[in-house]
Amino acid sequence: MTPKPQANTQSYSEQMFTNITEELNIKQVILEKNGLLATDYCDNEEAMCSLLFTGNILKDMDTVRSIVKSGLSQRAEAKIKIRQPLQSTTVNLDLLLTQTSAHINKTLTRDLLEEGLSNELIHAINGLRRKTGTQIQHRISLLVIAGAYVERVMDKYRDAIHAETLSKHGNSGTNYPVVLKTYSLDGSPKEYLAIVKIGSI
Image 1: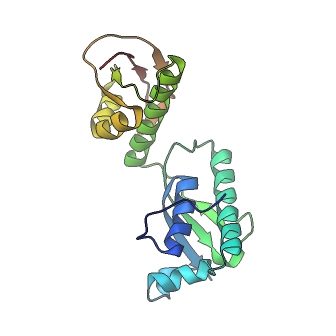
Image 2: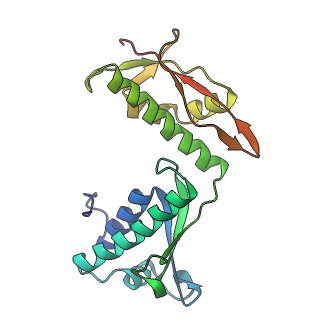
């Protein structure tokens, strides 16, 4: 794992945090020390960052790898795919570089579930692109026939889905059925079927 290229506006510590959030697909990294959150006794963000990162890139990347390894292990144990975003991970600075240093928040809110579903749709659609031999320079006409839950997610993330799959909204046709995972929202199972039409634009 190497630091990912970032915009010049990011500081060194921000780049390190970005590596963690992107590798674990989480929204936030929370620091904890002596049973307190870092915000309880640090005056500013730089002071909080110095608790985790030293400025030595080799040592700091070891720290990032340790946190990511711990987080991925917890995802695997909970059977939560990496495409499903999570809200946060809390890093215990007293246990840094151990397998128990990071604890992922596995609570799946409505917004997180919907974002996860949009990622699953993107993954499925791009899988169909590959299966049909569609080249990256080609656009596809996309039609998804599904229940109200999926339709709501499609409407919410339509721009992102179209951008990530090089597609536009289609009007007719049903080919290449893709059955995705059954989701449960508010305690009720939500089954859905996504159907994608590959065509010219």
